[in-house]
Amino acid sequence: MALIPNRTDKSKTSGDPGGPAPSAEDEVLIREIDEAVRQDDAAAFMKKYGPTLAGVIVLFLAAFGGWLYWQNLEESKLEAQSETLITALDAVEAGDYESASEQVQPLIAQGTPGARAAALFLQAGAALEQGETARAVDLYAMIAADEEIPAALRDLARLREVASNFDEREPADAIAKLEPLAQPGSTFYGSAAELTAIAHLEMGNRDEAGAIFAAIAKDDTLPETLTRRAQQLAGVLGVDAIEDVEALLREEGVLPQEGEEAAGAPR
Image 1 (tube, rainbow, N blue to C red):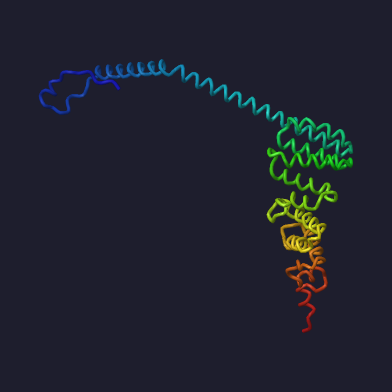
Image 2: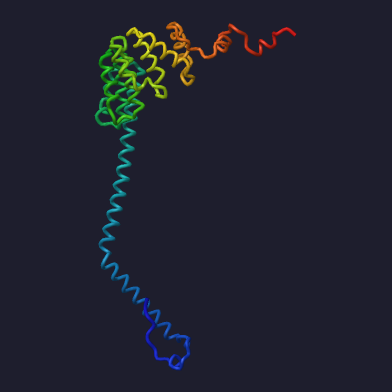
């Protein structure tokens, strides 16, 4: 900020504290000096920091342009992968499993984790349809071991890996592989727990199998077909899996419903 030029003023020497207001000429001079100082400051700033500032702006624009280009490439890549999967699924529907498997092969090496998982699942399903169980098991194992693939898909692959050759697999091995999935709260708890219970039966562990079937039967978050089957198997093994016997008998029609019972009662 420019300073007001020194002026000799009789009023100041005479003791007047306020002094007279500056004249119009003084105000013009003050504004001109202020403007000159501002221009000098701006020129000095640009001289000192201009090149750096320009470089930062250029780098920002280059980075932003690169990001837009990358986004466009990613979208194009995802669209191409989706089209490949759709074409392969059409081949599956047509029963051409070999062609479907070949079409998704590039996605396994170059696709995103999701596309890679979809391609491997498709190949594994095609292998099962063609009777190539061992190859299907290997493909499911690849999915389960790929940490880049979402956890839910890896868990599903582990379940399918065990289920695909369950009859040929050692029961203890099946139990060990399914243990993380056969816990209440797991996404695939019902199916994994049922296979675990069957494996225990094959090992002669009737008590363990019965307890697992009973736990499945009492879990009302599972599909009814699964809980009913588990309830029957638990009963065969001597484990009571029915919490409300009367309610079950009413559902089965052995006992009348509560409203019907009241309506049929003698007055």
